[in-house]
Image 1 (cartoon, rainbow, N blue to C red):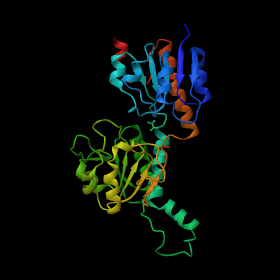
Image 2: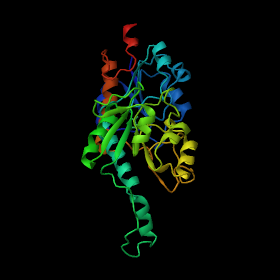
Image 3: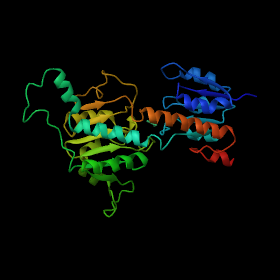
Length: 323
Ligand code: DGY
């Protein structure tokens, strides 16, 4: 019997070529996420499904998919998955780590630079005719050199962000999960209060989990140095957005670079995205030609490995293979 493979968005042709010989492909080609009802219909007789972070894969979807062997997310984050439900049902779940590390670190620095040096507002002012002459006090930003970047979540992407700090003559501190700081480690790991009172710019790189949801809340803002910058290229719900609005209005947060939001997409009517001291981008951390091709290939490769009877390289729930 032919294997049915569902792909929920148009992806790089080199990735489709990898899975095409394995079965009948069904690709959602519209330029918007596949509607959940359509995905339910399509997945009913699918053996494999290549998903995006916009597709919710939960118990109710998995219950419709009796032949499903693997769901392969084209993203490193997989907060759109109910991993426990998939494991109970013996469905392999995979993601695409590594391949988007450098692209996401690059965007993080683009936001740090642009926010601290007021690049966007200077551009806007110029277009509006505000550049009347060179001014000793005009368009002033904050110098990066000599400042400290604080990294929350020191995994692959957090480390890639940290590596680039040296190029800007910045120090790096990392939030120590254990609470205790070890001053002899490089970069310095600091407990929360010390971390928040040390960092000039804080960049988030942790996954969205029940324990990290709204982790950046009013208590964080009250412990930050006034004038701290905040960057989020990870997941929107890590930040309590209302508390961030208040912190921006009070000047505790001098500026924020946000690539992600609690409910996506957002537009110019979103108070935080449109705040004059927020630079907002539409979840483009991994959006380079090179990385999106690599992510698609990695996701397709995980499906290929599962369907030829192997263990996918990026298996998130190895328990299913031990059953
Ligand atoms: C991911 O992979 O989790 C990013 O958010 C999108 O590339």
